[in-house]
Structures are given as C-alpha cells and as structure tokens.
Amino acid sequence: MLVKAYAKVNLSLDIIGKRDDNYHILRTIIQAIDLYDVIIINKVSKGIYLYCDKNYIPCDIRNLAYKAADLFINTYNISGGIRINIKKNIPVSAGLAGGSADAAAVLRAMRDIYKPHLSNKELEKLALKIGTDVVYCINGGTALCEGIGEKVTRITSFKNHILVLVKPPFGVSSKEAYSNLDINKINKHPDTKLILKAIDEDNILILSKNMKNILENVVLKKHFILKQIKRETMILGAVGCLMSGSGPTIFGLFDDMLKAQNCYDKMKDKYKEVFITRTI
Image (tube, rainbow, N blue to C red):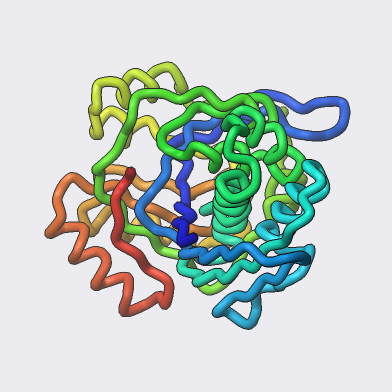
C-alpha cells in the first residue's frame, strides 16, 4: 500500500489560555498543502519494521510513525505486523507536522489493512495518544482546531492557493517555543472570526492581512533571520506571509504564479529547503 502524508501550515494560531496541566489552549486554523512524504506499507507476519531514506530520522519508537503502528497493534491486539518505508520530503522540526502526518497515514493504512470498519472518529481518539497534530492529520483539509488541538472542526475548503515555503537551516522545538511564551504579554490576538469569514468567501486578500501566529512573538525574537525571510517574501510579491506552527518555516501566500516562481528562485539561491506548492 502506498500512501501520501501531507504537510500542513497554520493560517492562524492563537493561544487563549493555559490548562492546569500546563498545556496551552489553542484556536488555530490549519490547512493541508501539496507537500508530502511517500509511505509504502506492507503487511508482515509480526513485528514493526521502519525504514527511512534520510539517515538522521530515527527508525524506532522515537519515530511517530513507528509509535502509531505500535499503538494500533497493541490497542486492537493485532496478531500481524507491518513494514513501513518512508520517503521523506517534508522538512523535520519545521512547523509543518511532517512526523504527525506520517503517523496519521500509518494509522489510516493499518485501519485499511487490519480493521476496515474503524471510523475516522475512532482513529482520532487513537491519534490523540500520539499528538494533537496527528488528530488533525487523520482528515487533513481545512480545519479549525481548538482545545489543545484535539477538537477538530472541518470548515470551508481553502484549496488551490499558491504557497512558497522557506525552511532555514535549523529547527525549532515546539516545547521550547510554547514554554517561552508568556500569555499575559500577548497584546493582540488573531481575529479568528474574520479569518474564518475570509476563508468561507475565498477572499485571499482579507485572509492575508489578518493572518497571525502568536508564537512569532517568541520565535522571531530569537531567530532574526525569520523576520528577514518574511520581509523578503513580501517584497517578492506575496500577499501575506506567516510562520507555520512553532516554526521555523515561513510561508508566503501568492495570487500570481509568476511572482511565486520568482520568489522560489530567489529564495532557492539562499536556502536549501524551499518549496512551491498549493493548498489542498
């Protein structure tokens, strides 16, 4: 079985509080994009075998795809096993949910192989044990995610819009980004209602003017290069620009493919991991 694990970007990311267990309460709009890892999954008699074409990717329980397979087998007492081969295209530690997308793809594939009558809702409950982004990645598309990210509401699709992604040569720890954020010092929150309305009306200009990611308050202060990437992306014709998730990937939203291609070419001269893609 060959499956595609699609990356995501956050069109908006707000933090509206903190739970007693220190998890942050989110309100974020997530969008799937046409950048994906390719995963080949084979049924085997027993065990979990994971291989990846990038030697810096762990192939044991530290890998979310492995963790997903292990959780599925143990939850449903599966007697068989699985072999997973991952061709990695999504940058790691990039704010694009690459590991979460892989895990969700493995859960969906194992459902199809071993438990075809499981609903997506049941898969989402399982996914939450791995990570909140995995819950979103079960269905993908365009969604409003709330709580700690586990409350996923499908909204009007925002597909077929052009993006240029720039991932600088370093990663950002989500845990570090969130722990360094002082929610009492957030002066301006995203207008989520306005952003949802813009998506519903497919109004790229209003969306672009109102996109906001609260975590930029922390991450952009630490990594000044991200401000430079945002500024240059806008100069090169993006109608809007934002950091995805906890970063460091910056994406520019374009309404013109020629401008997007020019931005891609210019950025590719400076950075290794640059992508031109679309929302799906």
